[in-house]
Length: 471
Image 1 (cartoon, rainbow, N blue to C red):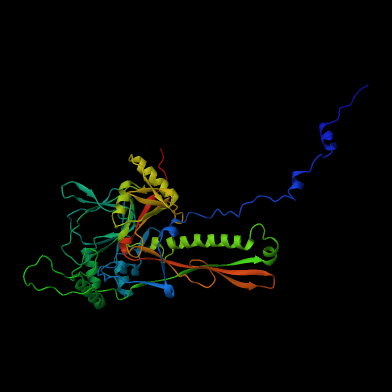
Image 2 (image 1 turned 30 degrees about the vertical axis):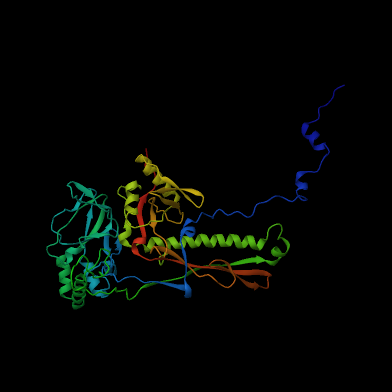
């Protein structure tokens, strides 16, 4: 008798179920679950470390002593193929032309700027040689060297896009270059000669009056920060006549108005009524919305063109790395430009590049305890991550250094508390009602800004190369 074998699949299909399936059991079980997760949430060190100051009336005025030397701004250009032109009104960023508003005269000066293309290794100015005009750097990277006190060459700050050199030559016929300027990369600069400037000045009474007013201001005694000097006498004996003085203030101090980030949170009433256990749907929706608003707030504090840190750093506090990647020397150069630096801020990838630069020199960053968390530091100053600092397509980024606090005349955050329906300090979640589709709406708003009390409170190391070099 032959026994036919039964396929295994038919045997399995015919076997009766002996217990409750897991799929069915889950319908009766209470699943252990997490609260909604959100990848956008970061550490937000900037918001945590900034001292927050109450801005009554939605604005904060920064009063400073009067400064005579103003206008050390960055020059911008227009490129038309291989031809580069300076934007006429951008010449107003020069200290000599600060506040001069005659567009026709500025255009005439811009038209007289001649273009020069240079390559790496070109010497653009030799120390001790005659200076016959101002040179505006449209593009490129230039190194500066001078003679040290004890002989030998010393490296000075690096010049890059928007910088210039030789400005004093426009009015001084005996001006000479006090440093050697050498091109590290190829690039382009525009030159306005003293003769061309004098020709335009001779035909413009308005420019003549402006230059006279500028030279008159320059004759006033100033301290090293450009502020009007407070006259005083020290070390005298007898009945010496004491100088009289007063402390002058800026006539038009800057005011920072609070910015706002808002959104309307909508929740269907059916969700709020039926699905509020074990987690409150309204609370979770509001929590995630607030997290997104706080992320946006930090982004604006870094990048906003009106009050963002990257755009409000004084041009004298913007420096360039000596070789591209960040090195301990670059970090020291950034650190030494202010007293009481509280922190560095850098993109996480930039922090990795800092580590590589330190390792290449045989050094390792310190670590400090910050609120129970160990973070890397240099010279005792913590280096904190901030992914809101942009990275360019050329793989360069910036490192921010700042002193914080009102008492320290540093950088402060601004906010307004005591809002109606305030949910967190400076953030309100206001009930807006229910529409005809039974959707509940909440207006979620946060108000904020940042103020730099003194120019040296904030510094930026720009154009830091963060891509690792090939081995």
